[in-house]
Length: 101
Image (cartoon, rainbow, N blue to C red):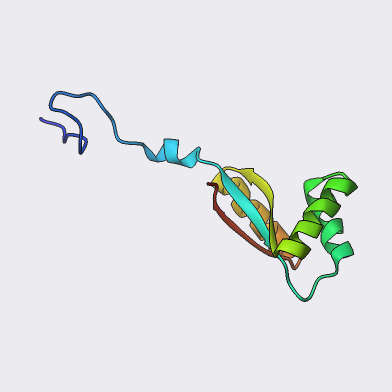
C-alpha cells in the first residue's frame, strides 16, 4: 500500500505535514474588550480574582482595555483560553480568544 505524498515534497521524501497536535501547541490569547457597562475597579477586581494578578498588573491591563479598547490578558493553549473566556464572560466582561501572532 502506498501512502499519499506530502504536497510540495520531493519524491521519496519523508517530510510530514504539520499534525493537529503540533497546531494545538500554537499559542492562543484571551482578549478583554472595553465595554460601556463595567466599572474600571470591577475589571481590575476580576483580573486579581480570576488570574491572581498583582493589583498593579491588573490595573495596567484594565487601563489598556480602557484606553486602547482591548488587552491581551493571558496566553496558552486553545483549551486554556476557552476556559478563560468562559470564566470572564461569567463575570460579565466582553472576552474573546484568538490565535497569537
